[in-house]
Length: 325
Image 1 (cartoon, rainbow, N blue to C red):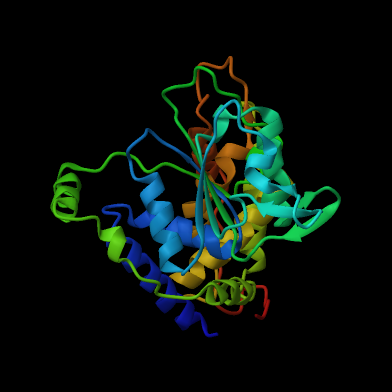
Image 2: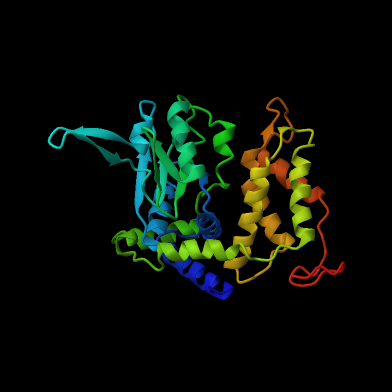
C-alpha cells in the first residue's frame, strides 16, 4: 500500500463520518489516527455533544462491530469481558462473549465504575486479549476503546488510575458546535438520522495494513530528538510531579507517523509533533494540584512545546549532517 492510498482511504472515512458529525474535522482526524495506531481515546465532554454518534459512525465506516457499555458502580468485570456459563444440556461450560469482543467499544462514563471493574479493561487495551479462567482469547483487529468522562457531574465517580490513563493514546474533547454548525445539525437531522444510511467505505483489513505501512514513515533524527526533548522537559518541570513515561514517547512517535501519512506525506515534521503533543501527553502527566498557576495540564504541555527549540532540517530527505532516509 502506497502512502497516497493511505491518504485516500483516510479521507474516505473522514467524509463518511462527516455525513453524521458536523464541524469536528480535527477530532475525526485524531480518531482515525488513533484507530490506525491501534490506540484508545479518552473523550472528556458534556453529555449530548455527539460522542456515541461519533463512535457508531466510525464503526460503520470500517464495517466493524460496535458495542457500548454504560459504566455504573455495580458493573462487574465479567459484564465487560464475558464469562463461562454451564450448559446443563451438554454438561459443559460455554463461553459467552462480553461487549469487549468488538472493533469499537464505547465505554460510556468509565469513571463511574469501581477501580476493580476499570482494571478489567487494562489487559484488553494493552494486550488486545482477554484471559478468563486461565484461557486467553484474542480480540478482533482493529480494536479501539473510546472512553468518555463527564467533567461536570463528578459525584460518585472514581478517578482513573495513572496506569489506565497511560493506556489511552489520546485525550480529546468534542466541544460545543458553533451557531452555524448547530443550524447545520438541525438541518441534517430534521427528517431522519443520517447514521441509518451510513455504509462502510473501507475494510478492517485495510485499517490493519495502513497501521503496518505507517511504521515506515520517515522520522528524521532531529525530529526524534525533538520528541525526546519535549518528553524530558515534562520530567524536569516545576509544575509536574510525574512526567511522561516511555510509553508516552512511543505513542507520540507512532501517532505523528500516522498523522503525516493521512495527510499525504511519507515523512514527519516538527509541526506534526506540535499538533499532537498536547493531545498525546497531557493526560499522562501528574501536576501539583495545590499550584494555583499553570495547574491545567494542557497549558503546561503547551508551555513546554513553546520553550523547546524546534529543529530546522530537510525532514523529507538528507539532513545537513548527511543522514539519509
